[in-house]
Length: 214
Image (cartoon, rainbow, N blue to C red; front, side, top):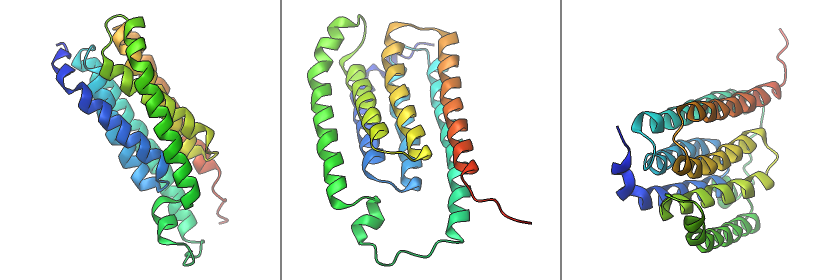
């Protein structure tokens, strides 16, 4: 079954990946990040399903949700362990508690993200001409994910957020690839890469926990 029926939802998918990528970049709470990542995969599914059959597009969606669940399980375990030893930071401001960032850092990320979005809007029409068969909405969503994912990757050293940034960037490349080639084998390999990144991130998170003495 063809996914061409999703072509009318391309713009909605682009806005969805833009909103979730910005949320991942500007809000550091792991619960919000996991919710945003799972919603982001819905937008990626919509953009990929424009050219891929629904069964292949669902592969990307399910693999993304499984990767999110793996990361969520690991970070929840770490948070539970850390919560039992850390003292509450009552001196933190409301803005810092909500975003996890200082106001200057948050403004810097928003301004930089806005510049990347403007670059994506500028490059999208030319990319549509270079890549035959691809839609403007797909190019826009892919460039936004690649740009904001790389920005996120350059601004963090946390294994959890590094994996999220890599998954975001990989999703952008998959959207462009979906318009170029319909390959079940490559779709499975890309799903395996997403799951592998999540497993590596989960291992790094859990291995950083202090050992509990018996």
